[in-house]
Length: 289
View 1 (cartoon, one colour):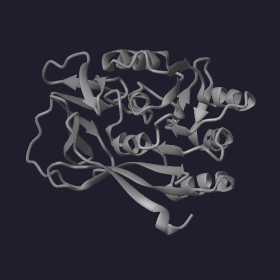
View 2 (cartoon, one colour; view 1 turned 90 degrees about the horizontal axis):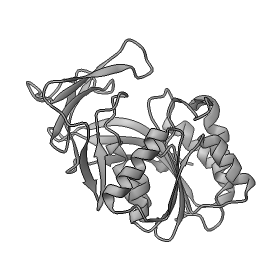
View 3 (cartoon, rainbow, N blue to C red; view 1 turned 45 degrees about the vertical axis):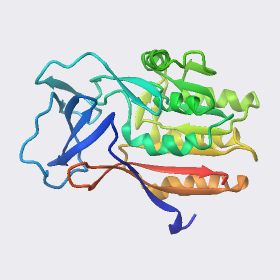
């Protein structure tokens, strides 16, 4: 891998989600008709607007593990529908400050959709299935894995909402590392893999996931599921003290026998008011082309 492989992937404002403004450690967003304010340590600058008028604000707790609560300034529905590329999904004010999906993934979804037709794809840590459904709608056959039964049920509900309930999607509640290891033992192969692990998590049987300890062995198993006809592997990493160069080199070494190329870099969302870029995550991705 070389410095020429470094890239910034930018999520532009779109109908379902817009970053309106940011600054003073917070971000002001619109999800459909609902406007929210959430903490954002990367927003070190001053906001562009003199005042914000959110429907709800997330107030973080004192711990570093995502605690906190939503304060509603107006009535906000329990959930409400959004859409992208023909796929519909629910947004909601979750206890973990998220809205039920990650809008900065939109450019990654678009990139994978170009490679998804007639492809067998595994989505690990698949959450509520927006990426799964977008890849399925583009012609892929999906295996969706998440340790949270509630998240998988949310994915099924989104599939029903999108009219994709009959698509070839396997919805699996399981520990990602254990499931992937079993797929290796079964001799399975995939055309594409999306890997979006949390910093910390627990499997359905209490299995502990720590990114710094468990990412490398999981990634090694993922690479074993690829072959000379595979098309891509996308890894995204949030909220960790880790460099894009680090995960880029890790993926580059592990895929050396497959040929192709590896890109790595930052993911960001473009602010609507000034056009500045708010960094959100780092990524590394391998592709055959």
